[in-house]
Image (cartoon, rainbow, N blue to C red; front, side, top):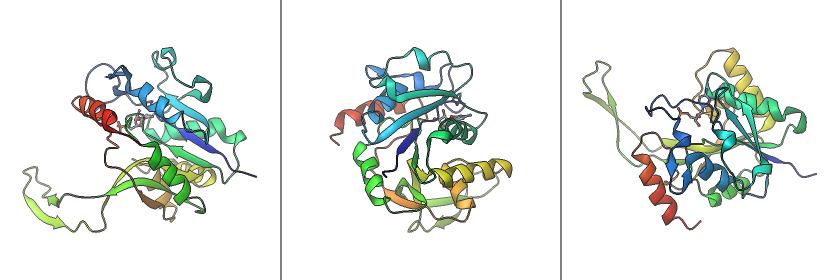
Length: 234
Ligand code: C5P
C-alpha cells in the first residue's frame, strides 16, 4: 500500500506579538491574504490528501475566504495553545489514518515556503521511522546576554551545531500523536512539534531549507514576504 500525507496548518492563534485587531493570517499579502497565499500554495501539492486548518472558535473570516482547492481544506476548532490546535487537527483525521502515514505541520504565517523544499522532505525522510523538520544552519554569530535586563554579553555561543527551526515539520502519525498527547499531559511548553517528539527520546532530522521561508511576525514582514514570493522560481 502507499501511505498518505496529511497537512495541518494551525491558524487558531490571536497574534499576540503582532499587535493590531486582525490575526496576522488575515492581513493583505499582494492580491490576497497571508492565509490564502499559504493554503493556495500548499494545496497544489498532489501528494497531500487533506489540509486540516484549526481555527479560533470565534473566527468568522477563515471560512468566508476563497481558496484554490477548497475541496482539500477542512476547518476544525483549534485549542488554547498551538499544540492543542495541532492535536485537534490530529483528532479530526485519526480514524482515517494509518500509524505510519505522514503528518506535516506548517505555520499559516509562513507563506513563502518553497514546494521544492517540501518535496525534498518527502524524499529525504521517505524511509525514516520518525520524521524531520525544515531548518537552516545559524549564520550569524550568537551571543548570550546576562539575565539582568541590561543586555551585557556574557558569552559567545558556538554556532556549528545550531539551526533555526522552520516548518513544515513532518512526522509519522503515531509519533506526533503520542508526542503531543504526552507533552500536553506533562505540561511541557511546546513551541514546535519536534520539541514534543524530542521529549519522547526520538531524534527528528534537520532538512536544510531555503532561508526565505520567512515567518510573518511583525507588520513590516508583509512587504518582505511579498517581495520574496515575487523572486521565487521553485
Ligand atoms: O504566535 P505564533 O506565531 O507563535 O503562532 C504560531 C502558529 O500557531 C500560528 O499559525 C498560530 O495561528 C498557531 N496557533 C494555533 N493555536 C493557538 C495558538 C497559536 O493554532 N492556540
